Length: 440
Figure (cartoon, helix red, strand yellow):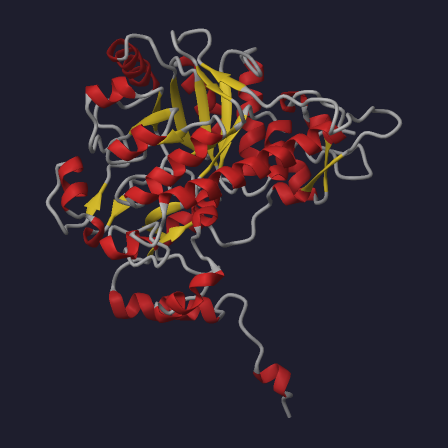
């Protein structure tokens, strides 16, 4: 006779989640669309540890010895390089995907810490230009909201080739988030689903990218840096080609990066994790003799803590960019809104229907009544506090490794806790000299 345990045994291939998704697909006849990022377990920065200084290395005293955090992008080409006080920027999130109050709050917080925000798809809003002292303008395949006047107002241009949550795929903004203002900025009809292109319409390869970067430099009078963002896939070669096309910085977005809305199959099954992407991009810059030089490397995709910041930089990044974490800092998925999330059939920590426009926190919505719930001044204070903590944590770890500037961190300061992380990051497995794939 079977035991109760055997009766309740769940199938590995057809667990409750898979069964539910098959049934949903059969009923609705369309793929699942959601926001947020990958939910599957992937090797990440938690699988690495720092080797703090003791006898063989000398740590720095946190209260008396400084640890620099500044980053300068475009110093060799741009008349006005982008100077950041901290190595953490706010990633591109479109107006339409998030609210005007969220845009203002991000700008206020970033400005207080001396770093930049990024426009996202759909153009530049008055709020973000007013409250972001340092604003990066995204130049996307859709060209929605793009115009030369706004390009010239920016402090840097980011040419977006791909995004970590959906490399090879375009963006998505459902009709109920396209209100009058969003429609006017994007030159779109109201209340109609909008899909952005997956590639730029006027180039088919790296030679055309080089031409486009040259055009953007002419439009902006060679005043500001031009960067290129790619989703992490063929990262080594993409980085080489972006640099040879003339980029002042390469932004590599790992598959743990979030999105406002795309197909679930993209989020979970396309791209590579952020951990190996850092190493591959840094190796490309080293091959060109540009690592820690005139071309900067910015990493995004799942950055949550100062430890993540420090580990990304130790593996070769010059700075990181945050998106999902910034929205959570603003109040997304807050326990204070438990009852509101319950009404939506979700709960704090689980809400991912950013595409639905019903966000009770007033962040990923265009509903006027919901937007009022987000006070941009308080939100800006929260963002500033969060950025400050990330920076202090990263400095603390750098000092513990004996570094007087966060950019002095290096792979030698790290060990891996799993064979997978050791292989992906290219650092030894803890307690050994072994890096999987390399001879002992």
